[in-house]
Image 1 (spheres, helix red, strand yellow):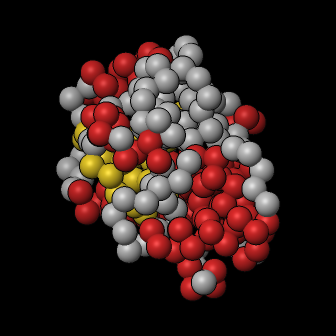
Image 2: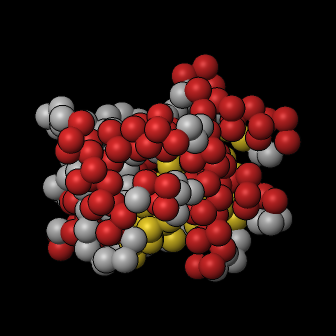
Image 3: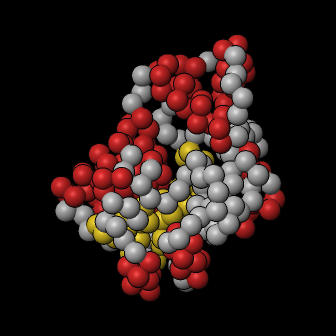
Length: 238
């Protein structure tokens, strides 16, 4: 996205404020990331707090959708994976059986994701770091839900090995899938797959809808779209 002059930001803020009462507004992924960073700096809300709100909100959504068995949470190394780690903790707090598969080495995690990883380790929640496709395939037959927390809106190209196989295994399994923020592999600006892409029954997106989600051809990948509040105080921006 081209750099915006400071005078353009009130327009974006007004657009986001308007989105709370409209069904169809959206921003590009780059605009959403830039806006979130700016709001964090302006309001002083730590990004770790926003991750907590995102993961907890997605966990509450999953509970309202109905959980009848084990939830397998598939996490990547970035902040999307961190959202998944928070979700897993809140599901565990509700005594819902959870298995966390981390498809990365713990040393590779983003700073906020690393904080939540170590919380889970200390809490004794069942975690599989450096998970493989075989680990996932062992968990899928007994799973009720899979949570896709592999990749967020920063993905720039087709998923590479082993993630192409991970996506294929999830898509072929008879489980319900909740994607966090965006189905892994989907281009959030165009609403088209970049390559292998998660087919979710539900997507919990954060802050504001991505522009590509409004495209009709995105629906088979998104499933039902839910906008989850992550705690940014709109009144302070107005």
